[in-house]
Picture 1 (cartoon, helix red, strand yellow):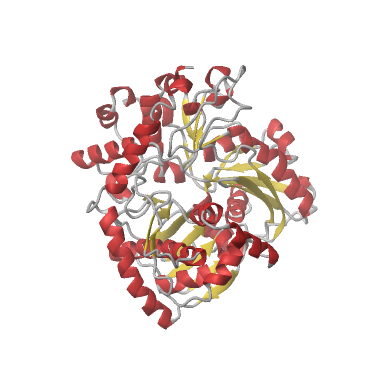
Picture 2 (cartoon, one colour):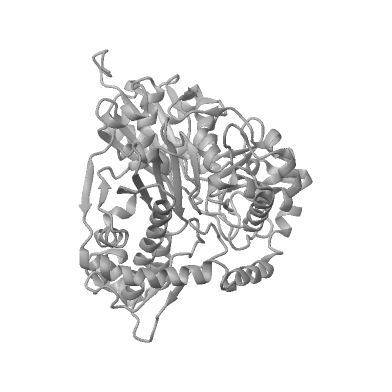
Length: 574
């Protein structure tokens, strides 16, 4: 297709909403060249301890504190990405905004926004400003585990047909568990909410004025399979007040990936500086849009989007039941194939936690003296070690386990520490733990008859060459990195081009606009053998703590919740 038949270049905008910031990229339609970018850091970041004083109403009163496992965000921060990052990207690209023909967005999932009928978030209403359940529940809000456990137990008892599509367990991160928590902990907010909306769809609503549910999050996070949600009878068995959840709070038009949800409104054109009336693509998830950006749209190409967490996505030609997968959805990534998803709830977050709380000041000083960041400094020290030299094994569950155990009550473990253990030892053990977690996911797919032929990495962590080699050695797979540093935003831009009619479908657009591979890492045979021995020890710990042999992690979580269960009282009753 001649995408410049009018003699002018056409451009699209991809906006990637991450955990801490939103990134916009300007992409040329004919070849996918990234011409400019802009970033906007969320002013309120991730809210884990108390509601922000600037949003908690007047008079402010005492701080509204949050229990453990909560993670909230502020929807206004998402709008401000459109106001700041998009114009900055256009300026950086040096293009005429009039040549932009489409915009698309992707989001972390499952990130949920309770809104009124017109899309106004509940937290923006004065009456709800001090009520935590009125705010966005970020993907890593894990306080709905008790509700997820009940959903899983009832679905298994009833033999619900949709349960195997999610590896036998749904997550506390997902729409139904979080929605049930809202109902049971703040029924007033639940009653006032007209729609329970994925942030991926809410931001598209802000751009084009239409509320369209994207097929990706509906299938993977909203238990939408074969054209239906769980029945009202099932929901009523969980809680009588939950019976009409689908009909009154959730159900809406399902939009196909790559289609236009609508067209840019005059108000949104004012925010972004883009022409009103351009195509706005149906929303999507940051991981799933990255597959086309990596040109990984065929069966067996596993894409790991590695950042604060890791999401693993892959297409398959056949439907298989994979224990502990996050889901399998018909057309969940591209039409005509089954899209599989798995993931790890903590990866970069774990490394960041350790450098913030576990590394002594003299290491930070030495890193600064060497002109290095603390991660780079620890990586240099760790890279000189032989495999197994540190004597440690870690479990990568500091933010729970998304796959294959699907249990966010699990927590981190490091075994083997002595008085001789140094920070670089622990750092390398944590790097290896996340690779062992990915190996566990790869093995689960293979054992279920979903072959993994290629391993492709996108996201911010691909810059760590030691980490990439560790992943290649532990998985035993050749590993390539995506050439783009903005994989999700490029993937969104590809969807924008299809929504604007510049390409026939995602496959065609990916072939023209997808990124060339970056670095390639080949497994080193002696390293593969050495890590095989350590992986056996990882699996021993994994099964001991994660498969019911020892419930200590669950008991500790219960003790923690009981210690903080009164924290929400003031907010809910305000």
